[in-house]
Image (cartoon, rainbow, N blue to C red; front, side, top):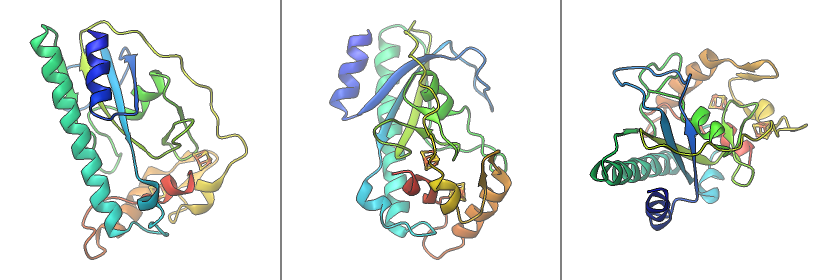
Length: 208
Ligand code: SF4
Ligand code: SF4
């Protein structure tokens, strides 16, 4: 079954994936947890990230939506594969926030990816992949298919503080990320003509 999953992911052009146990993961909203998770991610375009200044660009907004949509399509295909093979599967959308102020989705894709050994949680609060840095968007499929856990990576930001300097909300400090300050800035950005969405991207670009 794992071979079939990996074939599907590779055929779908997914460059980053791994497996994790979900024990102890916080789940929000109407869903029931399943014990294992497939974490998979697409890499954002470097050229598009370079169009971000101290605010999101219109082309980044479109790219962000396209990548999230593609991840959701892959989640659907994984779910179908698991369910026709007799397993339970629950695809968690790449970007569906259910509590904006605290920035919670149904679960933390980055915590699942961290447990899967795909990176560490950086000073920006984002999952930092050793090669693609913060430029990976993740989605998750929960399942009852028994999957091996990943080898967690140690914190690797070292003496880099670029995202602290770049954040237009001064939301990132050595003590963590002030989600309320970040959220206020995202609200401001959403009012920019043509953006209309709570996105930023500045700390992703800073990490490249
Ligand atoms: S998303 Fe933007 S405002 Fe929020 S922490 Fe990152 S750089 Fe700062
Ligand atoms: S920009 Fe530097 S400090 Fe911030 S998350 Fe990336 S590696 Fe860590």
